[in-house]
Structures are given as structure tokens and as C-alpha cells.
Amino acid sequence: MGGTSEAAGPGGPAGARPARRRLSVDRRREELMAAALELFSRHDAEEVSIDDVASAAGASRALVYHYFGGKQELYAAALRSAAARLEETLCLRDGGRPLDELAGGLRRYFDFVEEHATGFAALLRGGQAGEVGEIVDGVRRRLYQLVSRQICAAEPGALLRITLRSWIASVETAALDWLEHRDVERAVVERVLVDQMVALLEIAAGHDREAARVLKSLTLEQVVAPPVGDMEAHG
Image 1 (cartoon, rainbow, N blue to C red):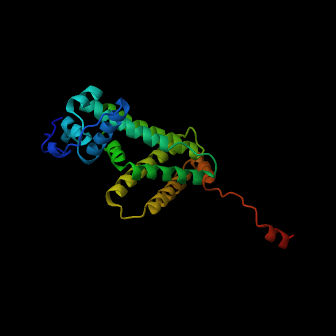
Image 2 (image 1 turned 90 degrees about the vertical axis):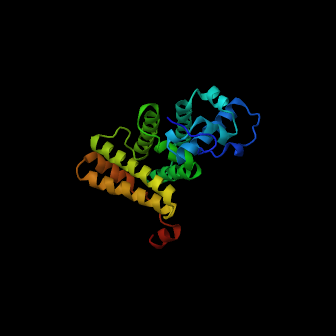
Image 3 (image 1 turned 60 degrees about the vertical axis):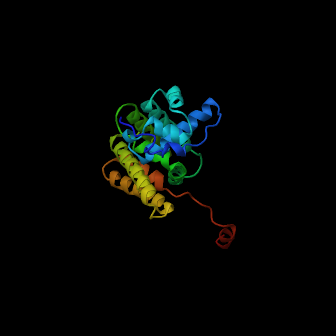
């Protein structure tokens, strides 16, 4: 956990530190976590020191220790904050056929990715060990549960579970790649990911009845009544 110095760390030179302001406890914690997410998303955790975070937030090193106890605690708190925002974003919206619900959830996911790029990148690049790994796994479990409900499979069997988790891994990879390059329109990426879900289910359906049922439910078009004029013309 070797840190960088204030003079040369990721947060910039100490002379560039913003003027400190009197803030509430909650607001100051939020600012410290936001500064930490920004730095952790652009640098390995080992490269970021408490001094860097304090400098970026316009706070003292002692204040960071006061609120969080140390860098690992601050890191975990910042990632939990990003995870909570993402989970809130992914809350289900009722109405519409399952495929539309899936597309809507994916759109909200990418809304978060775009609006909170630093937090998202830090969250998924946070590593897999200890508390940080538990935070990342918690987000994935929540996303898995939401997707399962959206495709009308509250308790997926083994093959469907593998299919859904494979798709979630594709979504994460695509989101990180899009953030890094942005050389494809976001709407196209979202559409491709929805099509990937259908394609994965089509493959799984050849081996599993549950996957076949979910595929049928997901792609079933809503019956739309013809216009009144057409009804009269054929009456």
C-alpha cells in the first residue's frame, strides 16, 4: 500500500489544493468518497495515498483518517457508495413486455455508466479479494436477480443461471470498453447486448426447456389491435 507524496501524487501538487470549506459531516464524507473514486478509477489503489485524496478533496490528511480510519476503509466506503448508486439505478420499472423491460434496465445501467464513469470503473476494477471483492460480487448478484425477474425466471436452473451470468459478464466488459474508447454509439452497444441475450438463450434453449420457455416469453410480441379503419374495411 505504498502511497505517493503530496507533491507528486495523482491528486496533483500540494500547492494546487482547493481552499477548505466548512461542510456537514455527511457532505464532507461524500466529497472525500467522490475524490477517492476519481483517483481510484484512474490509478491502482497502491498508487493513491491518503494525502492524494485529501488534496483532491481540499481536506486535511487528519480529516480523512478521522472519517475513515485509513485508505482501505476509505476505498471500501467509496466503492460501496458507487455500488449503492448503481443498484438504485437498476430498480425495476413495471409495465411492458420482458424484452422491453430488459432493454430499459440496460439503458439505465448505461445511464449510470456514463454519468458516474469514475465510480463505475473503480467499482469493477476494484479487485476480487476481501471486502472489495464482496462489494463487486454483491452488485453482480443484484444485477443477476434483477435480470432474472425481468425475464420472468425468479429462480433460474443451472443452465439458465450460467447463461445469465455469462451475459452479465459481457455487459460489464462492453461497458468498460465503451467508457475507454467511445468509438461506437451507446445505443448500438445496448442493442447488441440485448441481441446477445436473445442469441445466448437461443443456444441454451436447444439444451434446456426452461431456457426455451424464457426465450419464448422474452421474444413474444404483444398483440396489437388493428386500426379502426382496417376493422371496418374487413367487417
